[in-house]
Length: 333
Image (cartoon, rainbow, N blue to C red; front, side, top):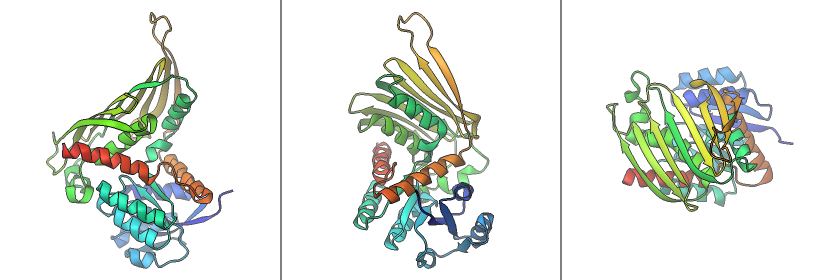
């Protein structure tokens, strides 16, 4: 049985709000602190959780507390590694939002730092814990589609007014654009099905927004087993779109939608090809729970289990490192 863990959240932005909602539904944790450089935001979000949750603006002051077990880093990319290192230095386990750092060198050093202290460090690729992806993995591991031959993935953000002024469009704060923001989720998912990637090709370009970083990225990945994947991620898709298609030797799995923002539904389409190649595939459609906060609950429970069992969580910091190395290859051309 998992014990009770005390958690501190660093970052009171959009993802921080999702974390508070998720943690509020969990009996295994207590959120004791919310930190943000904007004190009003920190106090407001701490109040959402409850009176026992305190607000902070100085993380050095927060990390002096000896009753905190886990720190969630949910800030702009620029600060994720430094906050994580400070938390590890204070003896806390860490859940870091993706991409965990803005360079593979920065993340590599951080992972060695965590390992030397025998502390758990988890990469916050919460898409792995969406119901659609969990079902897709179950169908695949049960051998329902045979050996994977290729994956085709699209992740298109619908855009919003003024987003070119947000921190995600600032290269110093974000480390890049759409590829290092949403693209890392798709790269992580491909790696989770393929294993090690042998070859990477891709293009990034700013096609619409006036910004320092790319708003579109196209990638081609080839695994060591010669499986192929194509990925397109976009900040100028106009209509939110999420689709992850896995094709095997005798069937396919499509994950369509992601939470309520991408079509309002999340479903899995499972198809088996006709053995004679003369008819359309037989399909089953599974409707999934589109509540995105459930993915945060599931990933936190994975971290708690990893702490209890003394093992690396999945996804681990090493998984994030593999993703960042691919991102860097694309950026370096």
